[in-house]
Amino acid sequence: MNEENDWALHGPFLDKTLIRNYMWMNISAEIMGYAPEVRFCEVILDGEYQGVYVLMETIKEGEDRVNLSDYEEGSDVTSYLIRLDASNFDGTSDDGDVVIQNYTWYTYQMEISENAKSGFQILYPKTEILQDGVIDYIQRDISEIERGLYSSDMLSGKYDYEADMDVDSFVDYYILQEFLAVNDAFSRSTYMYRDVRGKLTMGPVWDYNNVLNNFFREFSHSGFLLANRSWFGRLMTDEDFVDRVVARYRQLREGILSDEYLLNYIDETIDYLGPAIERNDEVWGYSYDPENLSNNARRIPDEGDTLEDVNPGSYEEAVGWMKGYMLARSEWLDENIENLYQYCHRSKTTAQRVE
Image (cartoon, rainbow, N blue to C red; front, side, top):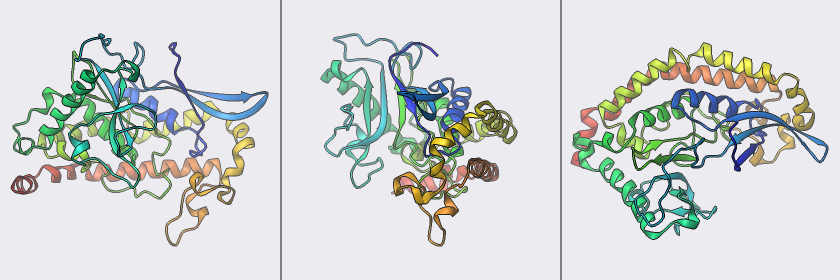
């Protein structure tokens, strides 16, 4: 892996298969061109074995990560890297990153929870060198795109969003998030960047440990999760965008996202881990009994189910559940991907223009 000074050591405690982040970061890189590099490792701390972890590149600006042209001190116009994540209502983030006051922030168009709402946080340029003029430039740049997306010009086809956005990256991001049923897509752990020489680009992807029905509550394998959410709800009103999503999905299902490719990838990854899985279970195997876990460390059953119904009792069961959900999800999408055209149908967009 390339030299750097920022890394994440991910302990896949909630992912009993151990492989979700590893597998889907690599597959995302095959599809989108870059995703954080990952490596399995076994951790020994002060002579005590800690189990299987995933060493991950963090998302940051850099030659071997998100490679942007350097910020020039004194200039307001800059390349930037931003993250959409939970932000405090007073316009601050818990990490100390600057939260921009863009169009969807002050119009409350983004996801809102009891304690926070989704906001764009500036990761590059770094907070310690951010000037007011740079913050204003990024705010205006994002707001200009959002005003176009949320305007009647988007519905009438007059807004040329492709002039500002790398549409291919938005298409690939959408397909990955929808295929994996990512609950917090485009509300949490969502990254975008723009080089002063180019367009706003989605990615890199992040935080895949909850994908494929590994969230705290059961996820149906059917239904679109992202098609009507925020920016994607607006992009889906354009038939050209839907055309590109459908065509790209069909293409990927013939290769990288085919059932055969993905099932082989899972099996080969498990074979690679080999006896490390048993060594990991010697430390963390107690977690196969959900009674040993608190509510924030296990899945919560729906009414009529038990803890055992939604929490795997062995490594083999966890892998089987993941495979089963993935195949059911892909089958549903295969049969329903063309239903995305409902979002750009004239009856819907005309009604929105009237409203």
